[in-house]
Image 1: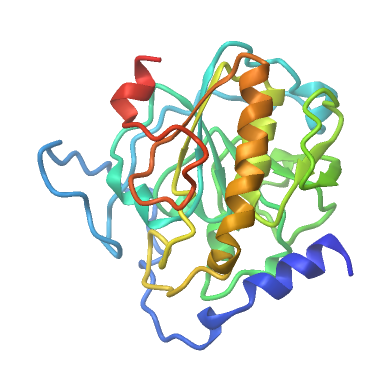
Image 2 (image 1 turned 135 degrees about the horizontal axis):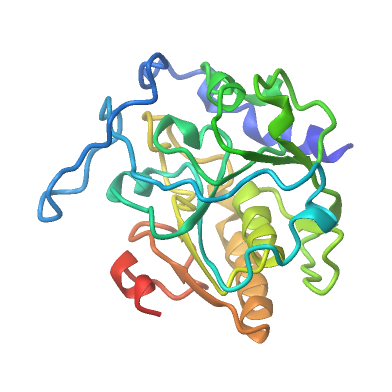
Length: 263
């Protein structure tokens, strides 16, 4: 069974059975919601919320290796998954953001990682990938699906599963979740520190009540995978942090965005 087929089998799940109401998918390039920091974290399904980013990356070529390797040396990166804790943040403009899948619903990242075939995206999720404004869209797939800005596509080569070999920068090792790959890509591009948000594996995505995460039952092995990756990153002088207060990943040091900023 291919990598894409394994991912598809995991992703096609209870989402098909649930009648949830995702955010309105029209007019998604909206003004940033500048709510006061003392307010409670925003709730899922908050229509119109946008996280402020300052897209600083540009398209440097058509292949991760060698076109992007060490081209952002010393920079601070945020890996943005699609978990509910995304809604705890308002401003990530001081960092390079490498997001996954339909993160464009709430912010425009510097880099987007898409390693799923478009047929695995349910409930209109693919159109957010299709219309992404990210200048760099990483994928190992030659044709993951219809992408409006195909000139933004950048090819990555898959490495080994569950066995990070960070010294080989012509491959991206992988697990069954794309934020893991995004963290490796951030390192390959030269990150000096990597913080994770929305890599939660708790119920619901940030945009809708989608129910139990399909990978939740693998929480033990997921923690171990991130633990190994974190240790390899730290050996190479990269500072790491999990910025989500609800993530099941406790193998990365947990801290606030403010604490991460001061590392």
